[in-house]
Length: 123
Image 1 (spheres, rainbow, N blue to C red):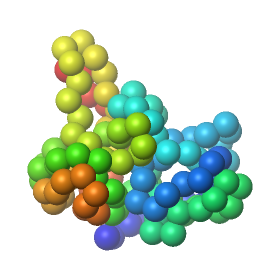
Image 2: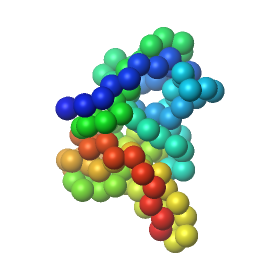
Image 3: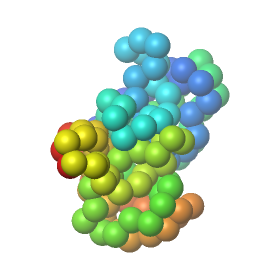
Image 4: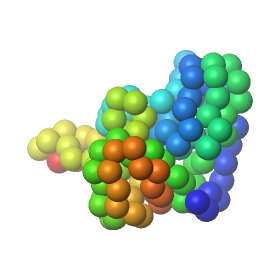
């Protein structure tokens, strides 16, 4: 892990470690991203947090994230329904938000590293 920029937010609900996050009810709160279309912007640090506690979020650099499915190094990464990293594979004409690029291959449950590079792709 080599985060360049880490910011502290309030957890809008329980935020598990190594999960992709998006803004919650306001600009001060974060929650797990829950779909490939969510405006994800970072990855929770290794401690996570309960609701209304402070949680560190890596927003730039290389971050560790829990995989929710098989990923190969170089895959564009998005979120599953639980904030876990999965390969972005939008259908034709569909947009997916991405959090970055997988740096290592792995399977569901692995903690792998992702180069944070938020963006959007279209199938």
